[in-house]
Length: 286
Ligand code: PAF
Picture 1 (tube, helix red, strand yellow):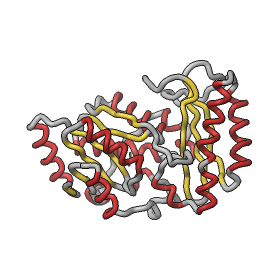
Picture 2: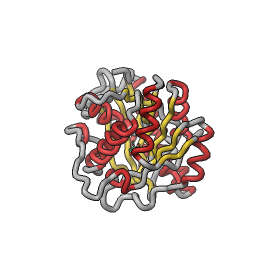
Picture 3: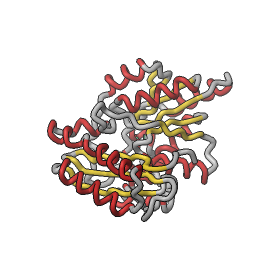
């Protein structure tokens, strides 16, 4: 595996691969790899000839007071893990390489960035879209793979690609969970032992909602109330940011479940802001 930190070098490698007719994939990450990231790399490996993984803790997607400085970093461990997945190139640009000192351009997907996480993180998705579009322009992949844990991020990136005619296929890959159900996240390392134990109930709450829907409940207010009560009992260390039942693609809140519905949750547990989601009805095919 090669490690490249300079944009012009990765562009030269990509150009050569293109001329050779290779299928190029990109897995954008902020590092501190866990099984979720590795599953994205394995998908990319299986479906392309040249696998690029970018590792960049993107400052523009963190708001004031968020965990940019504290975000876990371990390049040597990440290099080893990426190598084990047979990644071809780990792209590790520095902040100055990605953002010129006089950087002025930001990409925003209107409306979709106002729901769910957008309410408490108003500039987050603008930072994500800007860096992802830059990575797409630099790496020119045929497709890029993102985890479905960040469901809103995935929907927003798909919309950006559609609206701006970006020639990259955006692939969503299923959430990878710990044995007790907690969605894998680099931020899980912030959790104390007790917080970690309680955090597993985030997923149990989503499963409770799904069970209620399967039993015929369609009123979302009743489902949310049951799950909120469950969280209060089972995750006393958690502070709920939101618990919503939304249309999976439009991200608008639903009052009744008639067709497709996705439950999404964000909760602060100790120092970790955790998010998760589960499809309650319908399929995720667009
Ligand atoms: O999901 C992430 O890790 C980040 O938001 C991403 C897509 C790599 C952009 O920085």
